[in-house]
Image (cartoon, rainbow, N blue to C red; front, side, top):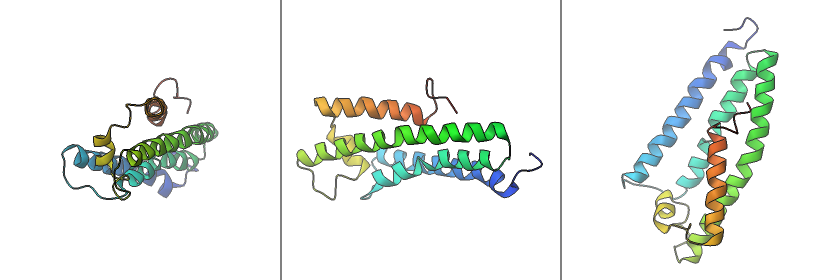
Length: 147
Protein backbone atom coordinates (compact mmCIF):
# COMPACT_ATOMS: atom_id res chain seq x y z
CA UNK A 1 0.00 0.00 0.00
CA UNK A 2 1.34 3.47 -0.81
CA UNK A 3 2.63 5.55 2.10
CA UNK A 4 0.39 8.57 1.50
CA UNK A 5 -2.73 6.56 0.73
CA UNK A 6 -5.98 6.87 2.63
CA UNK A 7 -5.87 3.28 3.86
CA UNK A 8 -9.56 2.92 4.70
CA UNK A 9 -10.84 3.95 1.29
CA UNK A 10 -7.95 2.25 -0.52
CA UNK A 11 -8.71 -1.11 1.10
CA UNK A 12 -12.49 -0.82 1.21
CA UNK A 13 -13.09 0.19 -2.43
CA UNK A 14 -12.29 -3.24 -3.96
CA UNK A 15 -14.47 -4.97 -1.37
CA UNK A 16 -17.44 -2.73 -2.18
CA UNK A 17 -16.89 -3.21 -5.92
CA UNK A 18 -16.79 -6.99 -5.57
CA UNK A 19 -19.85 -7.05 -3.32
CA UNK A 20 -21.90 -5.05 -5.82
CA UNK A 21 -20.75 -7.20 -8.74
CA UNK A 22 -21.64 -10.35 -6.79
CA UNK A 23 -25.06 -8.91 -5.94
CA UNK A 24 -25.75 -8.12 -9.60
CA UNK A 25 -24.71 -11.64 -10.57
CA UNK A 26 -27.03 -13.06 -7.93
CA UNK A 27 -29.96 -10.96 -9.15
CA UNK A 28 -29.36 -12.01 -12.75
CA UNK A 29 -29.17 -15.69 -11.76
CA UNK A 30 -32.48 -15.38 -9.94
CA UNK A 31 -34.04 -14.05 -13.12
CA UNK A 32 -32.46 -16.75 -15.29
CA UNK A 33 -33.55 -19.54 -12.97
CA UNK A 34 -37.12 -18.24 -12.85
CA UNK A 35 -37.15 -17.49 -9.15
CA UNK A 36 -38.86 -14.48 -7.68
CA UNK A 37 -38.23 -11.10 -9.21
CA UNK A 38 -39.62 -7.79 -8.04
CA UNK A 39 -40.75 -4.52 -9.54
CA UNK A 40 -37.79 -2.26 -10.13
CA UNK A 41 -35.04 -4.86 -10.26
CA UNK A 42 -33.96 -3.42 -13.62
CA UNK A 43 -33.26 -0.07 -11.95
CA UNK A 44 -31.45 -1.77 -9.06
CA UNK A 45 -29.21 -3.65 -11.49
CA UNK A 46 -28.42 -0.48 -13.43
CA UNK A 47 -27.46 1.32 -10.22
CA UNK A 48 -25.42 -1.56 -8.85
CA UNK A 49 -23.40 -1.86 -12.05
CA UNK A 50 -22.18 1.73 -11.66
CA UNK A 51 -20.78 1.18 -8.15
CA UNK A 52 -17.70 -0.92 -9.17
CA UNK A 53 -16.58 1.87 -11.49
CA UNK A 54 -17.11 4.45 -8.77
CA UNK A 55 -15.20 2.26 -6.32
CA UNK A 56 -12.33 2.09 -8.83
CA UNK A 57 -12.29 5.88 -9.00
CA UNK A 58 -12.38 6.25 -5.21
CA UNK A 59 -9.74 3.57 -4.66
CA UNK A 60 -7.35 5.03 -7.20
CA UNK A 61 -7.91 8.55 -5.87
CA UNK A 62 -7.18 7.33 -2.35
CA UNK A 63 -3.76 6.03 -3.39
CA UNK A 64 -2.33 9.55 -3.73
CA UNK A 65 -0.52 8.60 -6.93
CA UNK A 66 -0.49 10.94 -9.93
CA UNK A 67 -0.72 7.95 -12.27
CA UNK A 68 -3.82 6.70 -10.49
CA UNK A 69 -5.32 10.19 -10.73
CA UNK A 70 -4.95 10.05 -14.51
CA UNK A 71 -6.62 6.62 -14.56
CA UNK A 72 -9.42 7.88 -12.31
CA UNK A 73 -10.10 10.86 -14.57
CA UNK A 74 -10.20 8.56 -17.60
CA UNK A 75 -12.62 6.25 -15.81
CA UNK A 76 -14.85 9.24 -14.97
CA UNK A 77 -14.92 10.26 -18.63
CA UNK A 78 -15.73 6.71 -19.63
CA UNK A 79 -18.61 6.50 -17.15
CA UNK A 80 -20.02 9.77 -18.46
CA UNK A 81 -19.83 8.47 -22.02
CA UNK A 82 -21.63 5.13 -21.60
CA UNK A 83 -24.14 5.50 -18.76
CA UNK A 84 -26.55 7.83 -20.55
CA UNK A 85 -26.75 5.77 -23.78
CA UNK A 86 -27.26 2.62 -21.70
CA UNK A 87 -30.12 4.28 -19.82
CA UNK A 88 -31.68 5.40 -23.12
CA UNK A 89 -31.40 1.86 -24.50
CA UNK A 90 -33.24 0.57 -21.44
CA UNK A 91 -35.91 3.27 -21.90
CA UNK A 92 -36.44 2.07 -25.48
CA UNK A 93 -36.88 -1.48 -24.21
CA UNK A 94 -39.36 -0.30 -21.54
CA UNK A 95 -41.35 1.65 -24.14
CA UNK A 96 -41.43 -1.41 -26.41
CA UNK A 97 -42.74 -3.52 -23.52
CA UNK A 98 -45.44 -0.98 -22.73
CA UNK A 99 -46.45 -0.83 -26.40
CA UNK A 100 -46.71 -4.64 -26.44
CA UNK A 101 -49.32 -4.49 -23.70
CA UNK A 102 -47.35 -5.31 -20.56
CA UNK A 103 -48.81 -3.74 -17.41
CA UNK A 104 -47.05 -0.61 -16.17
CA UNK A 105 -45.84 -2.23 -12.95
CA UNK A 106 -44.39 -5.17 -14.88
CA UNK A 107 -42.12 -3.31 -17.32
CA UNK A 108 -39.41 -2.60 -14.73
CA UNK A 109 -38.83 -6.31 -14.07
CA UNK A 110 -35.85 -8.04 -15.63
CA UNK A 111 -37.99 -11.12 -16.27
CA UNK A 112 -40.46 -9.07 -18.34
CA UNK A 113 -37.58 -7.63 -20.32
CA UNK A 114 -36.25 -11.12 -21.02
CA UNK A 115 -39.68 -12.47 -21.98
CA UNK A 116 -40.79 -9.46 -24.03
CA UNK A 117 -37.96 -9.61 -26.58
CA UNK A 118 -38.10 -5.93 -27.59
CA UNK A 119 -35.25 -6.48 -30.07
CA UNK A 120 -37.58 -7.49 -32.93
CA UNK A 121 -37.98 -3.96 -34.32
CA UNK A 122 -35.65 -1.42 -35.84
CA UNK A 123 -35.50 0.81 -32.77
CA UNK A 124 -35.22 -2.23 -30.49
CA UNK A 125 -32.31 -3.59 -32.54
CA UNK A 126 -30.52 -0.23 -32.50
CA UNK A 127 -31.07 0.00 -28.73
CA UNK A 128 -29.68 -3.53 -28.40
CA UNK A 129 -26.53 -2.58 -30.33
CA UNK A 130 -26.10 0.55 -28.20
CA UNK A 131 -26.57 -1.48 -25.02
CA UNK A 132 -24.07 -4.06 -26.26
CA UNK A 133 -21.43 -1.37 -26.85
CA UNK A 134 -22.20 0.21 -23.46
CA UNK A 135 -21.83 -3.13 -21.70
CA UNK A 136 -18.52 -3.65 -23.47
CA UNK A 137 -17.43 -0.22 -22.20
CA UNK A 138 -18.73 -1.02 -18.71
CA UNK A 139 -16.58 -4.16 -18.67
CA UNK A 140 -13.50 -2.18 -19.86
CA UNK A 141 -13.02 -4.37 -22.91
CA UNK A 142 -11.08 -3.26 -25.98
CA UNK A 143 -11.38 -0.47 -27.30
CA UNK A 144 -12.86 0.96 -24.09
CA UNK A 145 -9.92 0.09 -21.85
CA UNK A 146 -8.63 3.67 -21.67
CA UNK A 147 -8.53 3.80 -17.90
